[in-house]
Image (cartoon, rainbow, N blue to C red):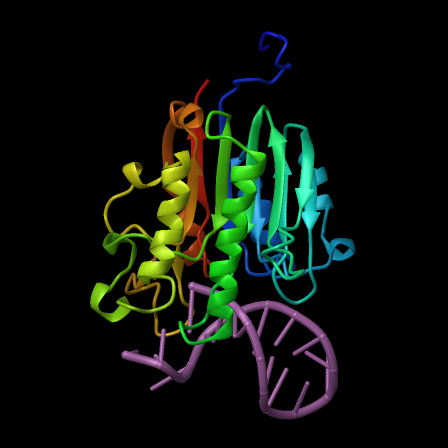
Length: 268
DNA sequence: ATGACCGCCGGGGGCGGA
């Protein structure tokens, strides 16, 4: 048993945290349940539930000993955090950034504040949704600068919909200037790092390690993907990181999500 | 190679995703 101290009974335990855009929790319910049984993460952050809160299949999580905090939405968006450890300070919405869509939830788990995000995709640089995406990032930046500090245990994870480096897209020439790979999006990503966060997954991944493959164009079999799901962590969390791995097997299943789960392993 | 997929709602296609 961990030592109980002033910081609480779970402080500093090893944890496996997973981020997974499930592309409909209803359609992916069986895969998610099997993933929990097989991988048993401490925390599972999900995006694109496409379900309102009262339609969420909660028994998948409760029957396996997980708490569940959801911020659902019908048809589009929706985020949730499942955790074996209690969640406190659960907060939903990014008022100046999400236009009422369900794209933001954070909670404190074992002393770590975890922001689980489904950032807007943006469609194309000349589309109004692109400005919405940039505004979402500005609101995110404002929130962390106002409410958090890089000196605390902090994780920003989720489908961030930005591929920050050349090695994060399968074809640099084809993607140059294309939404999710533009300079201004990379600058929004870098601004989060400059504030005091690190890309915790990148050091553990070979170049061209992806987390998303489009359903179209036979993308997955030819590995035409993007690395757009991330873990950005503060220094105190970075010191505990022992690995980060893409669960590609989930993308290869029948009725798979177009995203694979991305995990982050933390030591004591 | 962005056309072609998948899931949504609703009961037929249109929209959104990245």
